[in-house]
Image 1 (spheres, rainbow, N blue to C red):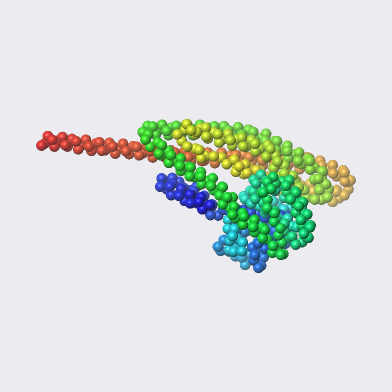
Image 2: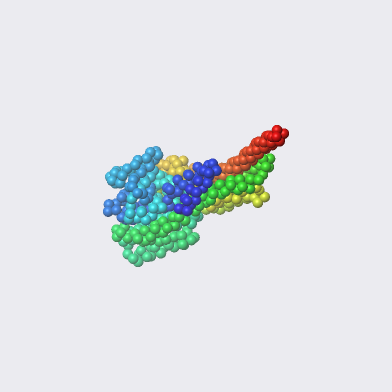
Length: 541
């Protein structure tokens, strides 16, 4: 990171010398100062996550509240800072800044009123050794609270490492965690499986449970090296293995964070480099030749923009059919789980979480099969367009304008999946509430179970499933179009920035050439005057 920072500072000086804009370089430098390896701690409620983190922090008095209820669980970001500070980010975007003592004494833990808590601590016990890591104490899974699902969806896409907590007396891989593992498998990021409360069970039970858990996890994670297993006990203060994992993440922080910033720094360097190449390569051209170069650049730019627009419109025509295929996959998944949903309603259970899980699992598979291959083809076509239009025969260098396919695909997948909670706990939740009321009380007791089941099945097929499928379709289509539009805008923005710099280089060369001609004309005029005077002198003498 220090090397990247030094390169960006050097580029800022070079840009300043040539009066080139350096706003993007300065923004990048500012972002680097605050970037951390986001590492959420995930698990069900009562998994011992907060107690685990309290033990890691090593304070004599616990800082994070333990044994809290779902209503009081709020994402808590924990990072190192020279001065202790607590920042409360409220749901209405208001911010409260307080100290550790006030934080311990006050109640800032209402999940509907507080969006997140940031603990910035001068903690020498652990955090000083992992200054580039941000650990996040997350709300538990399967709480039934919409805000928790939204919080988890908000943090997972930005995270570069993950800690999954399982209590030793309940090492069962629930479907909700399995779905998270399936999503993490797409990005091959470091994962630590932490067994908490190991003192609650005997060694044989611990070993057997851990063995079964590993077998379950293998169904979701293809790369075993991606996972580290740790056994801890907060009561015994035994968290050394987890400490080692966090220290390992710290040692990899340059790699985890650096890849992103290295790509962006190279882009900045090559943008400046293209300007300098144009300045040097065209230095010997005449004014008319430089004007011809400007016209050629504008022609090539117009051609590229036109072709990219055509490619974008062509992809847009494919989106509706992709969405229909995804909707059909979701419909099939819902129908496959119809009996389970009917039974849950008969047993007066809330099916929102189950629906959320079914749709997420279906979307994860469907997006990979139906959408991503087409996105990859589209991205390759865009990349080919740029390199063909400004290839080896072109006088203008656009080699550095590359498309980060993996990054684009990750954004699309995360965007599509992260919005599902808003659907299930939003418009669809109203329908589910009406459905639940319909089968409560006297009406429920007056019918035979099989008759009720058929009525529930009809309601699911006639009301719930169509609503879910329609909402999913609208969401997926909007997300695809948004991401593709952002991608196109980004590429066009980069190309336009490059065009602007190349035009600047050509303009400066023309100006210089005109100035040189003016100087030469002035010198010739002066010389002519001097020659005339000499001739006069010759006559005079």
